Length: 609
Image 1 (tube, rainbow, N blue to C red):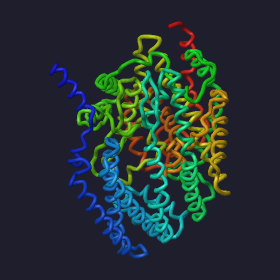
Image 2 (image 1 turned 90 degrees about the horizontal axis):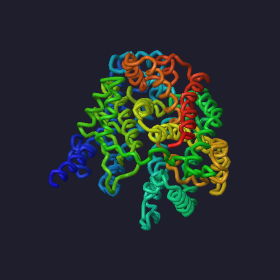
Image 3 (image 1 turned 90 degrees about the vertical axis):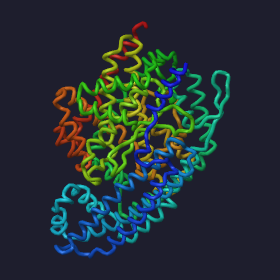
């Protein structure tokens, strides 16, 4: 028994990340506290350095500008380290008050860095094209010229420096505070949930996991509890959402940004034509998901496909995959494409860059984060021995490899947009899912895996599209004034009707989705919806190329990832795939690849188990 206990403890240790190699001692870390203190001092020094720069750039002042920009880049990397470490501390223990305090400190430091960005923007905007180009010809600045040119171009569409700085300062205790208030409200909500004759009080994160249950009564109860709970907070959520949008729209108006999509497109390094081409291909394809939904309804034994049936499992839904089995499976099949990616993944697992243990007190969800000057990353998730967890682990290891591919580049040449951020993660996901399908020995296994792939397509084509449509309609109405809570419900249902088409029963909509989905309340990036669908379809195109070219594509794939921080999305598509992303062709082909699983699923669903 002692041996078994030791083995179990060993397994648990392998599933806990090691944060002490970054700062020892967790949230009580003396080194982390001193690092934040030093970061604050350095921000003050760099702020003064930028304030002292001459207004006009010339040959004598180039070295001053260069040193200030390199100082800013170093601070950006250090701030990423502080932010990521605090985030990890809070994720591993949501009740860690010291970590929450550290995050609040980092929020203030982030605002100070934004003021330096604003100063740099104003200086860049004031220079002649010839002097600016001469500055960027310096060998130390040349690698980050894309970021600096992008910053200069954006500055031409902003207010004067004093107003931008004022907005940055107000945002800390206004704009961003609404986001934090929403997070606090959502985090504090609890519901009483009955299962197997027991009633327990659970968080909304735990409640959300019930929507994946094979039991329809459990899913239905979870959905109804979710709606009831947000019904009790809907007025507050409406106030928060309207306030966030009001702040954003006021800023846009002062900057003379005509479209509410200007900022998300700029953040995504994306053209409107590309986004429109993608959504057009998606909208035209939704009806072709109907046979999948009809077949799934028969398997589930239901007449109406409701919101809470979207992630209902079919096939071998109770298949268990241990963490060690997932590790071996993922690294084996990554090696089939690239030894470099497989070796990296083994290193990340061996060095315990992954927090996967199932224990109380952790936050929900999963992510991968980088640490600036510390050329490492950490993955956060909760592994529950399911095939879906195996796929999630592969997904997050893809994110981690993406960061690793950029590790020797300067900080400002390694900042990639959200749409391209999903490239390596979804690439990994597609690779291991296809490998699992090929290795599947039973009908139920294949059914479950095909369903996982088509669930993803349905969510990206319908659920995410509905979020995008809601955001657009809400912001248009918000321009005329506050949008009532009841009108928010109506806008959400209208968006779901348009996006889901005939795949969702008319009685199965989720009116309060606008309140329950934190993405609508994020202040770090607006319209945080289309990057998901974009990432899936773009990564699918990259994966398709890898399947055609085999292992010889691996170095090209690494080069593609390395360029994601220093090119527009359209430039990446043209250089590395030879495609014009503003045209329909790429997106239609990408959608076709996603829909290719519909026929096999329907056929398999019709066979007797």
